[in-house]
Length: 93
Image 1: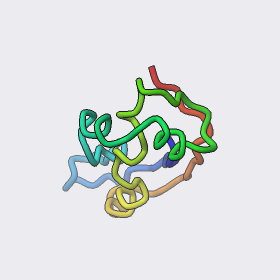
Image 2 (image 1 turned 180 degrees about the horizontal axis):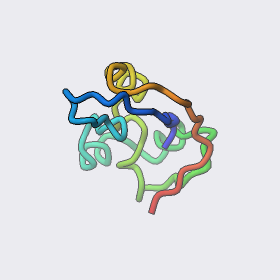
Image 3 (image 1 turned 30 degrees about the vertical axis):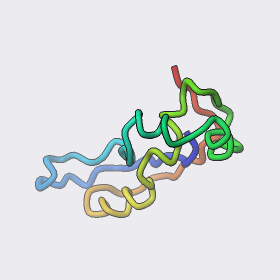
């Protein structure tokens, strides 16, 4: 919701079954995120991003996810970064 995205090209690693991460992955459960964070935290963490900022999406707060830059760096043998996109809008159901 607030940290951007990467467009990558797979390097065809047989060791990883020709696969790579499709996202950062969660750092904590949805329940833990709802317990730990407030709407004010969500507003602060998504500053500059047009998105929902209410209790219904607190479980999607950026802090509930692993750092995407670290995840991309950890799979540098699996993917080539094509582009890094800055988050400006995020639509959640």
